[in-house]
Image 1: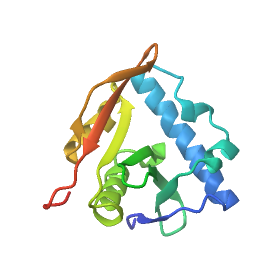
Image 2: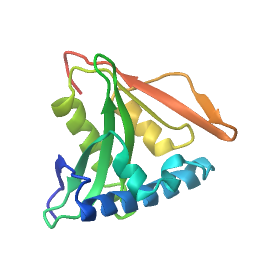
Image 3: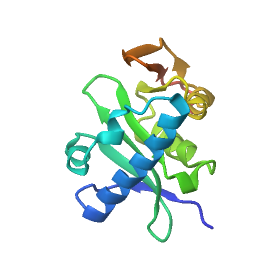
Length: 161
């Protein structure tokens, strides 16, 4: 099967938005199990609320149009790029989709920007992915009781990712 291609996602399109919402909820349900915390905000986010977020979206899309995973981020002028979510459809787990998406944005979309991301500290696959791609782990923090988050930052380097 050909590898998915990275392309922008238009959440103004109802089918695309519904697929992104469905994939996100499925992926966050798996993360909730991994970290032992089911209060992840995206698990309860409605489709209209997700669409209303001021995020940019990229997807890993198969030749037949299936979204295998997506990445969304927000930018502030002069500030770091903040990765808001990186989700892979469970049927596509362990096939390099998250790495494909991250490598693309880090090299093609914002190669010269500081990038920040957080994930559940107990989400070993995500922690390993960010560390493998050169992110440096910062301080852990607990936004709510029962949840420990790990923060990561990647500073641009002349050698790239």
